[in-house]
Length: 285
Ligand SMILES: C[S@@+](CC[C@H](N)C(=O)[O-])C[C@H]1O[C@@H](n2cnc3c(N)ncnc32)[C@H](O)[C@@H]1O
Image 1 (cartoon, rainbow, N blue to C red):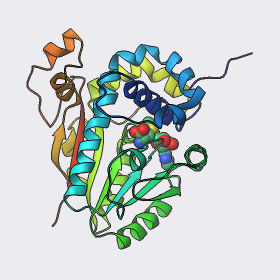
Image 2 (image 1 turned 90 degrees about the horizontal axis):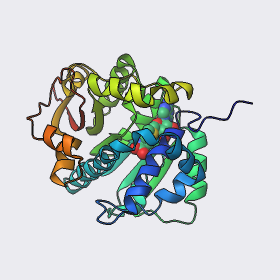
Image 3 (image 1 turned 120 degrees about the vertical axis):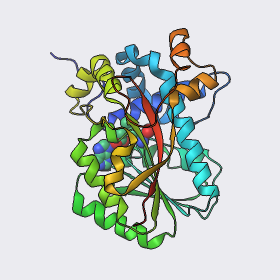
């Protein structure tokens, strides 16, 4: 009898991410603390961690992604954002673990089964802000446009987050999402992560078959890098490198420490494995 795969579907990638957050939280000198991650990742998280062990050498990249998103989010809230829209929020626990204004509206969107499980696990916890969850398949374009329209009407200045989502979409799908996000007036900023074609190939080699089996193939890594989004109305205002950030915190193995000394561009990366955490601003025409 075939054994069940560790990552069964796209939503299990959220467990994978939470498992990394749990591990880092429990280490000495952690750069962030997510006390909910262990519970959210559960036993399935242990199983996924076991299967994906070969990926552990990139653990620093997961940590820095969290750190850099946290920084963008805190900065945008300090600059007056009144709503955070976290698309494909997965098992993210920022509304519980970050210091947030109580009046801030935080909207999490993800697939129904994942949201049901998450709500059950966190049922006795209290978020720091006004948290709402939306069960939605973001591939349903009409439904997501309607959601964005409604959220747009309820906010003056919203920050959208997609963390760990775009890589699972095709270029055309990312373009459509970017266009839909540009429509509501109040959706002014968007924090996202992006991989270079070189990093995509490396990840496909290392964990691609596991993700293909879960029907969650890795796809998106535009050759032009962050400027990809310009034609959909989004301009990069800040591009941060997890590699450089990790070097600054002395979290890299020796070889990568040397590579981190090389200058980096915020545009096309050629064949270099690279990821960027980007803050986009809606262009005003
Ligand atoms: C890698 S996880 C990232 C989760 C979270 N943002 C994080 O960084 O921990 C990808 C998430 O995308 C969600 N997702 C993928 N496709 C989706 C869709 N069509 N509609 C809603 N959520 C989706 C999955 O359920 C999963 O929670």
